[in-house]
Length: 131
Image (cartoon, rainbow, N blue to C red; front, side, top):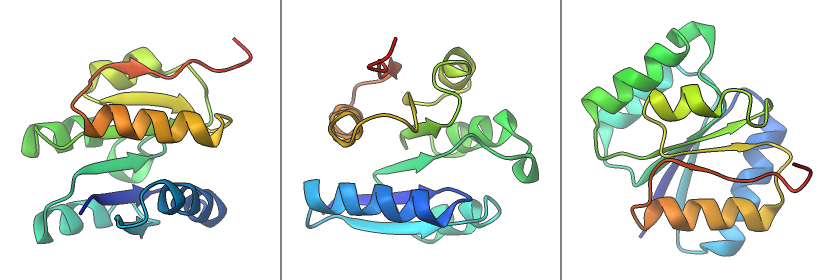
């Protein structure tokens, strides 16, 4: 069973991403987090196959939080799902994210990115259809 931890400040984003992933991966266990402070506890409690998150917020020190996750859980891939399209893609990948994509991506792009990351691919930036 695939286990995905979904972290985003916005409920509507979490619910939408969860619905897309549930249709593509009906047997997946997907847990939602609103607050970045919950990451550490959830990661310690049980193993996860990947994290999908918006850009790390100031409550967790921004990019440092992503780097900390990478240091403590080096095999746990993180897909950044950002409002900023590709503006921060380089920084996200340098900070250890397995992938980066804009929130305006189509659902099939999200499913593709998750599949690529679960298959072990790294450092991918999902192209936006309007670029």
